[in-house]
Amino acid sequence: MKVRSTSALRRTLAALTLTAALGLTAACSSGQDDPSQASDGGGQAAPAASDGGGAAGDPQAQQPQEADVSDVPEVVATVNGTEITKDDFVQTYQSQYQQMAMQQQAGGQAPDEEQLKTQVAEQLVNNELLRQGAEDAGIKASDKDIDTTLDEIAEQSGLGSGDEVVSALEQQGISAEQVRQDAASQFAITTYIEQEADIAEPSDEELKAQYDAMVEQQSAAGGSAEEVPSFEEMKDQLAQQATMQQQNEAATEIAGKLRESGDVTINV
Image (cartoon, rainbow, N blue to C red; front, side, top):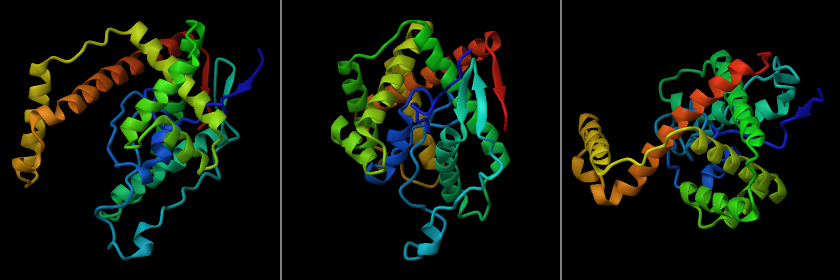
């Protein structure tokens, strides 16, 4: 079997979000959290700054920490003959490590590197399984599908358009061609999950319950319920989160089934 690399897929996020886009445009986005459980939480945009660690004027407190990747093998995993390389892994791992480091800075705790390495490897394997599943199902993104996907990512990231997503990533050294390839992969995976799973649109009752829980959590944390936008203002965002939650759960289940029937080797 011919071995090919997954270098065409830059995956910092889980299968349902374009990894490079949300990970690398965090500094120019609104910093909105995008919880993703499809691949063990790999889909959150890193916060633009730490809320708790050091003082705002302390450059040391805001310096991103570098993770130790010296022990990562050149081939992190093989999925049905497709290699996930060290470059693929490090790109995702460094992003998530820095995010965890910033979040834990206030408590003085260092990220658990071994646990995170295992988590990221599993994440990338699941995403590759889903990508292969979409390819086997004959799902292919058109130019229009790619443009729509980039526009959706822009909206999630607080950017104005898909072109802004491309520009932001080009500033990070990722070519426009690469970004569009990633968007095509995202579209294919999302479409595949929607075909394989029963993703139901959340009802108003479910969304209202979700909203009430959020208000209660705000109050329990010592905040004022009045600080939370109204239900009508939050409704679309809550619906998006509820749908993504279903997609993430479905992605995990589908990837698990694909792994059972596939040939997967993880080297970290």
